Length: 491
Image (cartoon, rainbow, N blue to C red; front, side, top):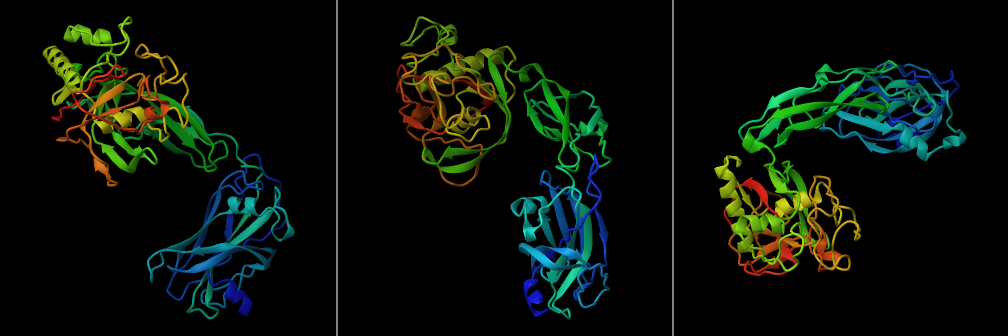
C-alpha cells in the first residue's frame, strides 16, 4: 500500500477494461456513474462526469472531468484492468472501485483557490488512448467497457488520498454518431435599420432555428457573425447558422440580414466597406516590433488604386509616366498631390450629400492600409508566404504598371495592395513600439509612409508589413495612391 499511496499523491482517473455489447448505430458510449464518492477532510464531495462519446479508434473527443476537488491538489491519471466494485462510504479507507494493475496517464493539477472545493481534474481520454494504443498489452476495441475514477491527494485522510464516484462507458466504433444534426427550420431573414454612423447590430438568428439530433443528444446552435456584431456600411450580410451535436458533427444553413442604410452610408462605386477589428501590425524580420492594433471604426477604401482617368477628370491633368491606358494607376504624384485630389473629391461628394458626417475622402492611415491589405491574413503577403507574377505586378513580371484591378482581389475585395505602384499613406513616419494601440495615427514628422511595393521593385518590397519612408514632395513613376472614405483626420 505504501507504493500505491506514493503513486497517487495527485488527482487521477482509473479505467477498467471488460467485454460489452457491440456499439450501436448512434453510440453514445452508454456512460453511467457508479460507486460512492468520498468526502474529503475539507468537506469536498468530488463528482465525475463526461462529455462526448468514447471511441475505440479515438475518432471523437471524450472528456472525463472530476469537479469539486479540493483546490491545489496533484495526481496521476491511470486505468485498471479488473473490477473491484467495492462501493465505499465517506471517511472510509479510500477503497478503490477499480483494481490493479493500472496504467498511469500523467500528472495533473486540480487548480482552484487554496482551501476551497473549486479544483477539478480532466482528461481527453481519446487523445490519451490514441497515444497509448496497447496500454498494459490490451488494445482497445469496439464494444469494450472501461471504468474511470477520480483519485486525488488528501493529506488529512487516513491514507492521504481520496476518491470520487466512478464512471463506466462502452467504446463506440469511430465517433459512434457520424450523423450531423438535421436543421428542419433555418432562421428567418431579418431586417434592421442602420444608425446615423452607418453601423448596425447583428440580431440573434438562432431563436427561430429548429434542429434535432437523430441520436437523441442535445444540439447547440451558434451563428456567424455572432449576435451583437457591429456591421459597418453593409446593406446585406449572409448569416451562417450552425447546429452541432455532442461529438462534433455539424450542419449549417444561411439566412440574410438586410440593412436599411441612409444614402450617405451606402458604399460609393468602386469602394468596399472595411469592418472595425483587431489585427497584429508588423512582421518579424520585416517591420518590428509586431504589435496589436485595434481599429474601432469602419471605413470604405477604394477597391483599386486611383486611375489616371479618375485623376484627370477631377484634377484636369495626368502626370503619369506610363500612359496609354487610362485605367492604369495614376503615378508620379507627391503626397501633396494625393491630398489635393482627396480634398477635391470630398468637396465634390459632400455637395452631392454622399459623405457621412465626420467622414472625408483621404489617404488611408498606415494601420488602415496594412489592415485592409492583410484582410485577416498573418502571412508575408495576403496570398501566403510566397507570391508569383500571377498574384501581383512586381519587378520581373510586366515591366510597367498594369490597369487597376488586373489581379484578383484579396478576401476583403481589395485589388493590387501588393505591387503595381507604391501607395501614399496619411501618416508621418515613426518607429513602432510593442504596446497595443487603438486607432494609431502619427503626425508631425518630416517624412511620410508609402506601402505595397511596385512593378519596379522586387517582390520582397511588396510584403504586407514593409514600410517605405519618403519625403512628401517626392514623385516617381512607381508611386501612386489609393483613397479611403474614413473619419476625418488632420495630418
